[in-house]
Image: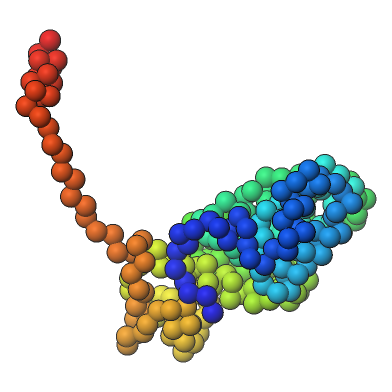
Length: 250
């Protein structure tokens, strides 16, 4: 399990280790806009879904190709990209970057002459989940995610089952968000934020690099949750002060 600590480097975001060289060359070159590359890019997304890795720039390249070639749009691919970006970060721009490249769901379905309106149902639902995640309303997030709405059922039955450890990915980014703000969290509160039974939350805390003391999870210092007051010293010369007083008196 990856440690739940705030990310300090964007290297993995820009160039993940799991990205093949052929994909790297494609998304950073002029061939990025060649629609004949869509099958390769969609296959790469499928590997992200099954194996649990993530490549935002490659996924944005798929959406950009759909934007320029709307007749090739695939609603399942679009939903998978939005789900990947939703589980990648709490405060990062990934979800909105993906959403910004897309047209309205009905326009997409019209372009491909599809009668399956799942995209119309699911997209507003995912936008709501993203807003709840972004504003750290984690308890409400799980209530929506586990709810009985049509969109929630579509996501759980048609998509989440294909993902490698999707629920754990959500719990990890929520834990990372908490780690940037807290040095101690009660296990009861943590169980609500992570949608975990109280008898399992302590085990989770240890897996992500935290320790447990009684009913409290202890988060190691990471530079964000141990803010220290800084002392700023200024050296003002007398001639500078004289000029200031003279300027104020003028």
